[in-house]
Image 1 (tube, rainbow, N blue to C red):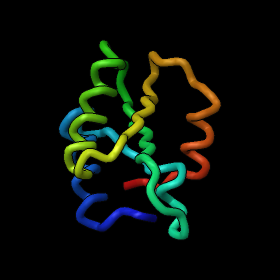
Image 2 (image 1 turned 180 degrees about the vertical axis):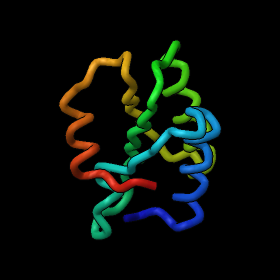
Image 3 (image 1 turned 60 degrees about the vertical axis):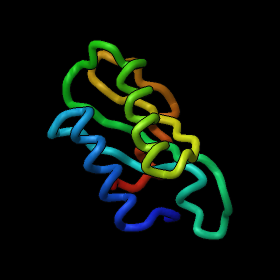
Image 4 (image 1 turned 135 degrees about the vertical axis):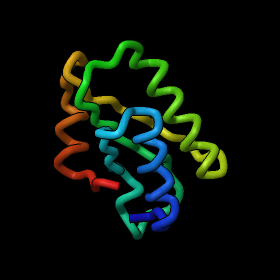
Length: 99
C-alpha cells in the first residue's frame, strides 16, 4: 500500500469527521500496488445512514484528502443505504483495504 501510516490515519480521521463516527473508508485501486508509481487515490466511503447530498459529501472528502496528499487526485465512491449499489462497490470491498 503506497500510503504512510500517518496518511492512512489522517484519511481515516477525515472520513469520520465528514461522514460521521461510524463511517469506514477503504483504499482500493492502483495505490495498493507497491510496485506501481504515481496514480490517483481511490477511496470507498461506507456510511451506515442515508446521505442527503452525496455529490457534495464526495467532493468535500476528495478535496480535503487531496490537500492532505499535496494535490494528488482523489476519487471518492460513496456507499450508503439510499445510494445505488454498483459494480465498483463490489470491487472496492473485495480488493480494498480498510484505513
